Amino acid sequence: MAEVVLERLSKHYVAGGSFAVRDLNLRVCDGELVVLVGPSGCGKTTILRLIAGLEQPSSGDIFIGGRNVKGVHPRDRDVAMVFQDYALYPHMTAYENMAFGLRMRKSPRDETDRRVREAAAMLGVSDLLQRKPGALSGGQRQRIALGRAIARVPGAQCLLFDEPLSNLDARMRASMRGEIKALHRRLKATTIYVTHDQEEAMTLGERVIVMAAGRVQQDGPPLEVYRSPRNRFVAGFLGSPSMNFIDGRLIVDGSIATFVEDGPDGARLALSARRAATANAERITLGVRPEHILIAPDAPPEPGALRARVRLIEIPGDHANVHLVTAAGSALIARCSAGVIPSIDASVGFRLEATGLHLFAPGDFGEAVAG
Image (cartoon, rainbow, N blue to C red):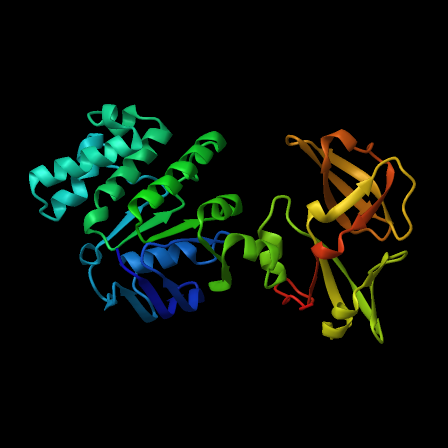
């Protein structure tokens, strides 16, 4: 396997008049598993296609194993790719689909057979090799597509995955995520994985790269990106339910900072002296994740507690997502134990854990305020 380096890479579509990827710099180390995550249209699939040679960049360079592959034909780049729609040949058996890439590269017959059967055994599809794709389930077809890429691993510089699990049901996606993670540990292959599913990104990636508008918004270990988002977009994209945002203003008086929620009867929240020292803008957005909102359904509110009305309750499992509306009209979601669920339309007191508060400059991509 090999290191993959992208330098000032851009892709501009003249017809649409827009950049799919803009001035991207990225380094994926040998043997690393990196996940590109972001909404549709953010440029993540285009990046894979540029690396694979299926599209040509408008500017910039692509290095695979130290070799600049800009302009090199896809078959000569030594990459293996798994597509979202499986891309299996319907007239070929599973065995023939898995062997196709090796045969195109004139691999010896015995070597091709060995690699295909090893990949099939690894994925538990040895008994499906003589079936054609039409006789396979979605999960089985995905395993065959994975097997085709895995069979190429010894001769490939890197593995590229383009949303390979998006067509599977939730249970199958969870199972396949575990299999891909285990395969990476076993193969130690340089892997770039694209998904729009933030849960998939957080569970799979050694590094997570959050994309938007053709640019990298944040790059780092999953927990670091989750706990210390660089801007409001990253904060809102990662997490389920996503981070809550309250727009307001910051009043600083010496060493004391007070956040005041927008709207009539807006809540007031005292912030630390450190936050007061680092905040330099009057307009500010306060962010807090659902797990950092503590509600007391029945008890009288503690001193300093805020008030809100319960609008909706969701119970996805062993906890409840409680949808709240403050007096000023801000919508929040709090996560609480399923054993302490308040009533719909009840007025409840809640507190925000100080360690879980984030401050952002105004706007969808407002930068995080340090402190």
